[in-house]
Amino acid sequence: MAATLCTKLLRNQGWAPLIQSVRHGSKAVTRHRKPLHIIKQKLLAVTQYIPPPRVVPPGAYPAENKCVQEDAGLSLILKKDLKKVFEESKMVAVVQKNGSNAEDMMILKHRLCKHGIKVKFFPNQVTRSFLSDSVYCNMAPLFIGPTVLFVSKEPKVKEMLSALRASPQMTLLGACIDNTLLSAQGVVSYSKLPSVTVVQGELVSGLTMLTSRTASMLQHHPARLSALLRQYVKQQSPDDGAEAAPKAEAAT
Amino acid sequence: MALCNMMSVVRAAVGGLAGLCRAHGHQRAPLQSCLKTCAAGLKTYPVTPDYSDVLLPEKPKLKFLNKVPNLKKAKKEHKKLRDIQGPAKLANSFTSGQYAIVAMGGGYLHWGHLEMIRLTINRKIDARTTFARWRINAPYKPITRKGLGQRMGGGKGAIDHYVTPVRYGRLVVEVGGKVELGEVEHILTEVAKKLPFPAKVVSRESLEEMQRNQKEMEENNQNPWTFERIAHGNMMGIRRVLSPFDLHNNGRFTGKFHLPGRV
Image (cartoon, rainbow over all chains, first blue to last red; front, side, top):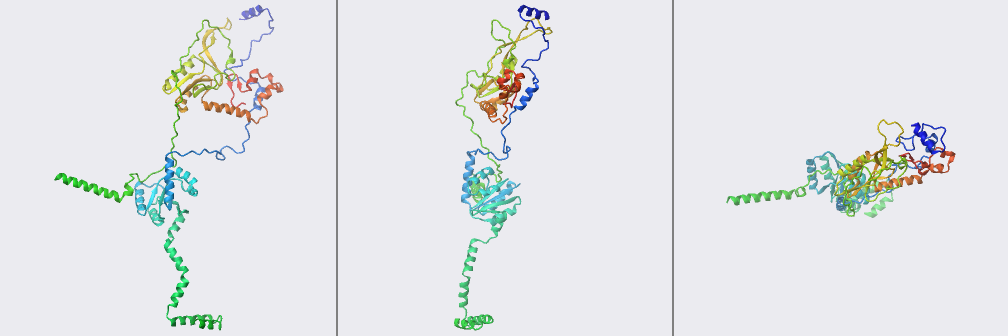
């Protein structure tokens, strides 16, 4: 090997190196990662990529441009149904059903149907997206978990509560009666209110109480009226004395 | 007489049933189950993509590549390892396909690799909907080997086999047609794992994203000291430990390896 090397070099008739090193390092392209010179290592460490400073850690706030997915098909139909339901009905109650069978549901439905209350099922996602657009946005936190809607045209709360009391798994979460949001306790107190006619009657009677009483008093026998007035004067006499007596006599 | 009786009985029964139905009409009419557990969300089915403008070529499968090029006289070549070094200038972007395998390092592909790629892809793709294309040449670089147990010297060895050099960023195979990435990904990853260099399955969009990310990193790098600046200015006499190759590639490559995260 050395002979061939020497002959080749001598043949060139040029310069023959005096010292030939047999040991040589690996080539530039190796199968393994060549160990880098320490200064090159330092250079690579100094010139590392530094990302721009983040004010907010990622994931702390929700994404700015949340792509609002357009509802397609079934969700549009369900939203139309929901809108119709909210427009038609005066009472919309949200009830959570936990572990009730089809049998129990059927009995409940039957009881409610007798009073004209319908039971509606809608997926929560659709209801929430519908509510966020409409006026009833504050009802959104009610729709969590397995919920059912009880809707009716007339606010028949007492019957609904009695039906719900019979089935222990159904929990009333809240209701929107006559465009007013009510909690569960609110619904109970609403049921205890007297009906509108009764309240109106009470109001009218309260307003006309004075006039009706005077009218009834004047219709009594005159002897009774005079006796009443004399008693009134006697009551007044320790307070006023002579002023009250001539006034009372002027009245009779 | 018996028939008339039967008919009347049947009619009565039907009438009775109808009466029952009318009484409980609000329950029987929709024939639904009373208990409907609605899922919280609603499954939306995205529209399938339109492939009407995709043209499938006549021969959709990968063609056979020769082990040895057709030369009259085969010449021995220098090792020339610089054909592995650095990033690829040729064949680093898509032509006709949608998805491809891109090399994330340098290496040599020999006939065995090419056969493996060809057979796997031809076997697994559906020729009616997908097509595949080579983006590398048949092996043309001769690799010499000396016989077993030979001592050093006695000239260069004989040509043993041929290889194709592949650089970082070169596309190896391209796949396209009326398919989505998910249908083709598992085939391409199977192939990519068996290649002698690290490889990745990309689509047109993901390749663009990779290039865009690299540019963004270069632009918003907060470090005032960059490899390029120091190397080009020969600061601290650093050219003593750097090669001209490092000057071109700004420290992103070492030999055949690509260093990720470097700017």
